Amino acid sequence: MQTLDSTVKWFNKTEGRDKICKVMQYGSRFLMWHLKTNSGNEQLSNQFKNLFQSTRDARKLFRLAKSLNELQTIIDKLGQNCKTSQEQVARALNILTRVWFLLYWVYDNLSVLSSIKFTTSDPKPLQKKAMTFWFIAIITNLVDTIRQLVVNFQYIQQNKNNQSASQQIINKQNQNKTLYLNLIKIFGDLMPAGQGSEFFPKVFKINLNDGVIGLGGLISGAVAAYQAY
Image 1 (cartoon, rainbow, N blue to C red):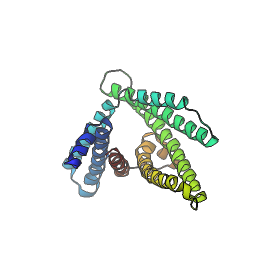
Image 2 (image 1 turned 60 degrees about the vertical axis):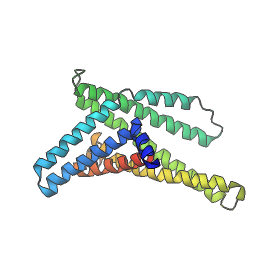
Image 3 (image 1 turned 45 degrees about the horizontal axis):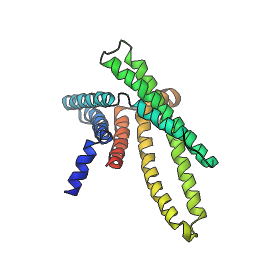
């Protein structure tokens, strides 16, 4: 019964619903590619294509005005007092990440409003800008995540023989587990963001197919759904 209660609360969370839709979106994209490429089942592939496009657009509509969340986070971070240089670096990276995400949400919102003909703008360049800011946000977040892991490892190494720091070491180790999951999410999200921003095609001369993009997003969504639960 407790598991059911937790599951219902999880589904009732906006973030939880979004992550389930993300799993459906990218899982459908992967299956669309797999069925068309490896099975030759064009009809079923098209069904998953429709599901992919529908969940993609639904998620975009759910995210309208999400930039306000980022703005609030930025304001809160700017008001924090940093006592050490490490805290200043952490705050700067966190604010930078939130700024890029804010710009991502703005252009993502403009793109979906154009797609549903609410505005007359061309959605394609707006979507490309959104994906570019998403890619930059992911890279900034990757740098910050690696920085946090390095800081935690240094603390654990320096205090492994210090009995008074044992609880703090356990906290750092638990934090590292979350950071490892975040790394998996980051590398998963790099697939759609890198392709959508055209960074991979233009810089590395690599065009990722729907299978790779779908699998990356699916893994990221599954980890995020697990964390939201």
